Length: 253
Image (cartoon, rainbow, N blue to C red):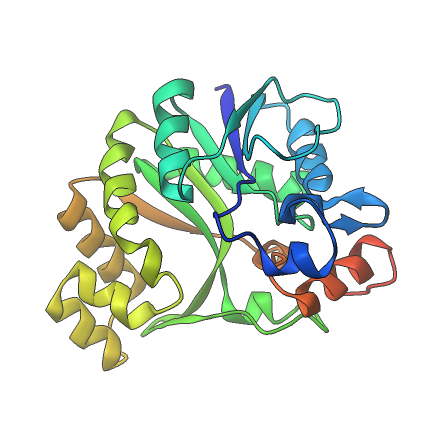
């Protein structure tokens, strides 16, 4: 199976605070170890044999990307969900989606995710890590953990779209983008009973997946990843400081 990969590197119209703080032209070009952080993501994808080509969605005003495997560069749309929808329409499936602000992503983790996604039998798969796995990244800033009855999870910015039916989840995502940091609001959008069970702390991850599947008509799944660094992207100055420590080789797990 040959995968296409889509890297989200766009900016919202108001720009990104971290890029402004670092005097970078865009968040993807904030430097870590003398390289824009998107370079680390692209290098990780280039080392995965199953990936045939990479498309980067990026603002037209962004600097030229380093040369490499990536074959196409498209202007980012109004938001990540629209960029992913466009990627699905133009690139087809199976499609791996990740983000430019994930410099600690490793090729080994990408390969593990692709294998688990393929084996899941779902149309849309999200890579996640248990809260305790994310916490193994010593010295890292705390991550947002979504609490289920069977444990807490945090996202790893890895998604697999396995079939055209994934469009249904993307349409649902477009309605939820503004709620992404509010788990209870996300649960309410799925349904009042789901929200009530989530608030009471009795909703399981499998029940949440089933609720989204009913809402969208799409088979969805999460797969667990065991790499603590996969659970940490770069959104804020303390995230950046941690990533610089890791990429400099001074961090020890």
